Image (cartoon, rainbow, N blue to C red):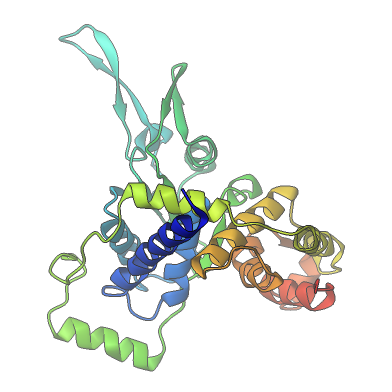
Length: 325
């Protein structure tokens, strides 16, 4: 294939992925940043933690994405009594056959909505770890691959803490991005209510005009194209300098790990590819720093008492780190 035809195919693929954003926008109003973040996670092969109060369309967002991409999706409501086997699946005895057979859990799908993930005990939370990192489930010594593509979109409520279990750093580190789903502005909420007044139902996405505008093959091809975006040594050095700066910040107890650096690189590649850039620029890195690193940093107790936020610390780190020309 010539360079010219490859460029045309790449542009067509990018147009398909951008159509996905537009299709999701038919159901979800005023969440452009969150929609783009979910698409970046899919292109980078990562997972997403969605944080927001109830009623800001987190579930609708994931369902609309699945519809626009023609992918299967499953919602798992995480509760205190949820067991690991309820997520990954378990062995069931078949009396007629006289043997055990594996019954797949809801995690065997393309997009998993893990609703209120912090409401289930750590033992069940950890059932997601292997699936998120290895894209597989092991039961009774047998390893079973999960579908491709595969993404976990987990939600948590930032306000309610009673009856919740804090996600450990090892699990937080498995999420490529943490996206904050904000309450809508007045104009956005008015537009949303107008849609509902006109008959829009979040339970009937087909009735709202949503349809599949891309396929799993399109997504896999786009993921490969995004991974091929080039990066200079200067920009790689910039990522390393930012990571090092988080570890030296006086407000930070635990800075980002090398895994966080590779996550930022993958997210920046996906963002650059979506914008039609053949190589990552420092701007792409800066855009993705906060959503990629905000959940990977632990602040010092005194900084938290003073009201310092992780986002503010990351903003300060970017201001104080030299940007390559």
